[in-house]
Image (cartoon, rainbow, N blue to C red; front, side, top):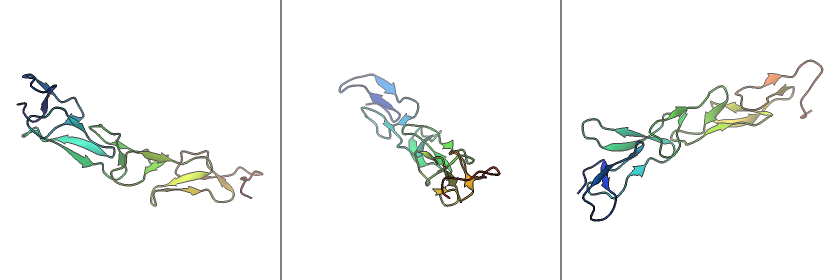
Length: 131
């Protein structure tokens, strides 16, 4: 029987394999390792060797199987909620409102090329298509 953190590659196997980086198991005698879902990161208890998946903090995101969370670039996008697996970037004509966690349309006379958290004033003599 393989200890926690290791697994038997097949039924009846006497050798134990170590879980890959970013994976874990919490049961003795496991036949595989699990990955954390998106929006979570893997934390290994140094004294027990047990792995646990915990939510990313507000403003952070992770892909499935990740052992760490990444910070969303606040000048360009936002994370929709705690435990998210994506950073949302807004398209042209919209800006990322990081306080309400949504894309909002630029006001008349302002523009955004997208991927920003603000809109800029149109240059003199120009305007947006939303006249």
